[in-house]
Image 1 (cartoon, rainbow, N blue to C red):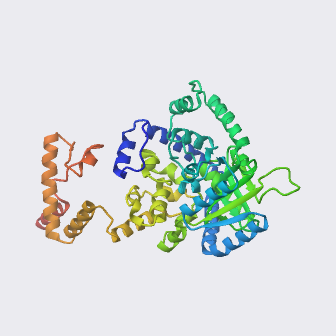
Image 2 (image 1 turned 135 degrees about the vertical axis):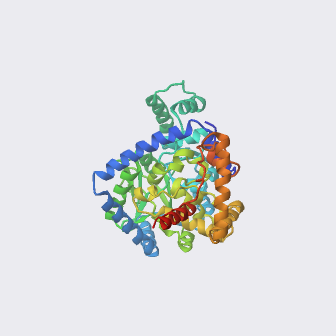
Image 3 (image 1 turned 90 degrees about the vertical axis):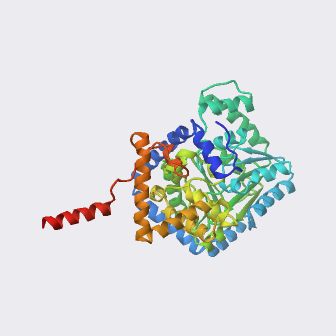
Length: 477
């Protein structure tokens, strides 16, 4: 499987993804399994009620975000946590780098975190001379391969077992094996040494409880707990929307997250940290820092895309998306992929047209809205983004000309009828040359005939058929 260069144009990334014969089967196999588990888990409870309650809670957070953030900061400080505020990703990464350098850190162990991926934290720390080790197994494999994660929950979803075995052989000098247990054991041994030698742990935050000042991370591996408790310095990077007002709200979101992400009633671990180690406690970090990061989130609210901030990063919309299943995550070219990524990436960017291709990478089938635990109307947001891009004159010129031509044709009966006759004549001529349905159409319609036949237009239009029918009935009457 060739590595997709995220800096290449969108069309090239998609073409490379579609040309990989192993990618779609690997992604479909994994996402179908996750989706089935999700449906069973949500079906075992009142799933619609859970989704409705989760949305109401998240909406309350956004409506009262300044108050909850102030309460959260107050509780953090009362618990001995050092709070930092970051306007953007660069500032957030620099804050973490500064914490590491001030404390003489050499090795950083990280728990899986989309927020740190969003700000490319690893690159900033490595440029400062710090060794960074991803400790989630999927993230560890991706780091060894030198790639970015391709799924919000399952970062290595695009890799086959054979490819992972080759990575372990090349990077860990492990004898080639197809036994997942042996590969997992080898990774565990390596990571165990890193845990004991690291001076700083870094994690994201699934949610932070405002009333108690508690950071919660949800994992299925013990690495999260090791990252938060073994190093002497622990740093949390969290988006400012990741607030749960109360413990009850946190448990509500936890249920929605676990059932939607992996189909579990409860994850194996939910690590809750409320501050650094106290004098009477045997373990825990000596320092705990929380970086509260905006990085475009307030801008999303201002632009009218605040609904996307209800996302709890479960990945369910990716698992059900027909586009994601065909092209995988790397073709989106950014940290967030799938339907939610197609909204978040341009909405978070300083200029909304930076990821102008992504809102069009959707069929608008609505399946993502139907599985979202926060009931986010992703199809509507995608349509809104398309409209905004048109207003900014960021739509492709050919598409703009085609739409203008369509509007002009549909506004004139004479042009409409002439266009219909021309389409009927030309497509039936091509069908005659093909001996049936059309096998090839000239650009830009050749994209259609690469995958399927193009049926010719009717030889007689409905309007003409109707007029002949009326004349016949009049004569018979």
